[in-house]
Image 1 (tube, rainbow, N blue to C red):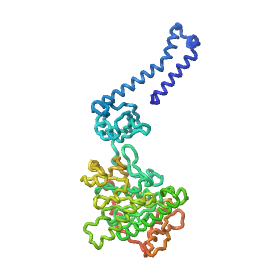
Image 2 (image 1 turned 120 degrees about the vertical axis):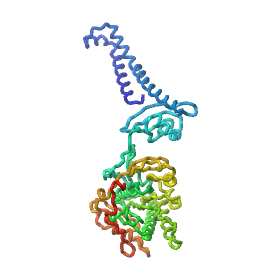
Image 3 (image 1 turned 180 degrees about the vertical axis):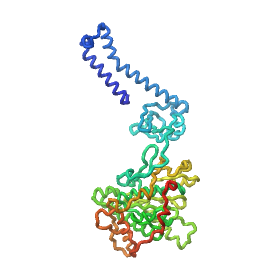
Image 4 (image 1 turned 90 degrees about the vertical axis):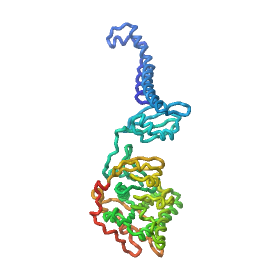
Length: 478
C-alpha cells in the first residue's frame, strides 16, 4: 500500500466504483450510450462487479507483494539470518535509484548484526552492499543500499574544476560507486592522507590544495623532500616551506592566530569561522597547512639531543592546532607514506577525524591509519583509496589532478583572499610579518600570498631548486 503505483491504481478504481454507486439509477442509460444490446441482468452484473474491483485489486497487489516477500523469506531462511525470537526479516519494498538499488526490510535484528553479516547477505542477494542504514522513523526498519556485482568503480577520473563544491569548507576527493566523496572542514577540520609510494597520496593533497586556493583560502605548504611535491609552480599561491626552522616560525604564528580567533569567537559567542563571517560580514580567511610527509617532519630517530628541541616544538605546535583549531578555520592536511605510531602521536591522530588511506602491504600501517587492515585488501589500482569517517569505510577512486593541465596562474583566479587577526602586531620578534595584510587591490587572486609570507628579516626563504621537468605528473605517477 505504500507504493505510489499501488496507491494510484487503488484511487482510480475506487473513483470508478464511487461513480458507479452515485449513478446506479442510470444503469439503463449505458445501453443507450454504448448501443449495446445486453440484458438488464448483464448491466447489473457489471455494476456489482465494479463495486468489488477495489477488493480484487488489493488482493492481486497483495499477492504480488507476498510473492516477493516469500522470495526474501526463503533467502533469509537459507542463510539462517533471523532474530532471537526466530523471526526472519520481512520484505517491504525495493527501489532503483540510478545504478543503486535500495532494499527495505522490517526486522527486530539490530543494525549492527546486519553490518556484521554483510558478506553473507551479499552472497545470498548476489549484489554488493555498500551501506546499511536504520530508518529515522523506526529502528525496526533497515535499508540496504546496494549495487550490482558487475558494477565497477572507474579506474581513472580526471579532475575538472566543475567538481568544486563552493560551499564554505567543502572539499571533494573522488568518486565511490555510490556518491562523490566529500567532507566539510567546518565539521571535520583536519585530514590524514596515507599511502605507499606511487599510490597517489600527493595527487590527492594537491587536489585539495587547489580547491582551497580557488576559494581564496591562505595556504602553506611544508615539504621536507626539497619542495619536489609542491614545485615552483605552487609558490605563486603560497609559501613552500622546505626548512624546519621556517616551519616552526610559521606554525607558532598560526598558533597565535588561532588563540586570537578563539578569544574573538568567545566574545561574540559564535561557534566557528563560518558563523563569525556571516554575523560580522567579515572575511576572516580559512588557512590550510599542507604537510606532504608528516613523518619526515617529526621523526626524531637518529637525531642528536642538541637538535631535538626544534622537533619537539614543531610537534607541540601541531598538537595545539590539531586540538584547538576545529572552530577557527585553521586546517591541517597531513600526508604520510610510512605511518608510525611513535610519530603520529595520539594527541595529533585522535584529533584528525578524516582518514584517507591507499593500499598498504603491511597490516600495522593500515591499522595505524584506519584502525583495521582494510587498506591491505585494496586492489593495486593507482588512485584507489579508502575513506574513513567515524566507523564507516568507503572505497573510492581519487581524482587525477595534473599540474600541467589543471593549474592556472594566480592572476587568472578571480578570488578575494581573507584577512588575519595577527596582521600588524608589534611584538619584539614580530613573526606576524609572515602574515601581513594583502595589497589594497580588492581582488588580487592568491598571488598576494607571496608578499604575506615575508620572513622577519624581510627576505624570502628560497624554495628548493627543482626544475619543472622533475615533477612529471603523468598517469603512471597517479
